[in-house]
Image (cartoon, rainbow, N blue to C red):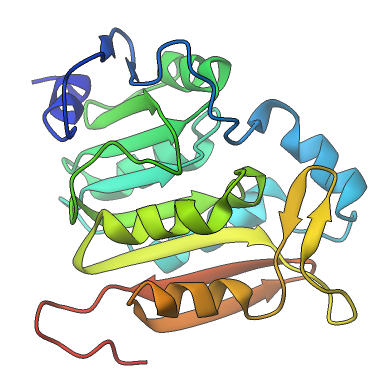
Length: 230
């Protein structure tokens, strides 16, 4: 069974789904998701050249996600799929799905897909088309600040995470002398803004690592009936 067909089986509904090299649940709708074709250039200029590189963000996300053989993984705002492909390798036979709102990015990622456990989906980060508790790992490597409603997207990632699952997000991070705001179309998150949001989502074991003017946050969904450990 192909990864694309497996991914269809995880959707809340199959109605209106375009099935090809990748899945498309948006049709002609554009939710204004991560515009990864130009985010790197904008972020380096508008958010400061001292921010983490794409490679640094990817390495940090992969290290903190601790994907295991057989894990079911989602990469939200996957862009052309650089991080998604690494996640799929770590998951072995576990299904890995890269999701992005950009048709061009998803098409590019799907053309480079090199593993049978890897599928891509054009979808809205603020309305993930999956049932609750579907994934063992949920990641976003430098995309969530470009989503129009980033906290909604964060809540969606927490929702689809299975008990005991891990959530890892690389994002912008305001300097100590700056407050939360928007710059160049991106949200710049305040010091503990994301960690507080994760706690409100019911996640525990929350950690935060600063990478110059960026950050990587990690959290775990409590096991059923267990404490969140925060």
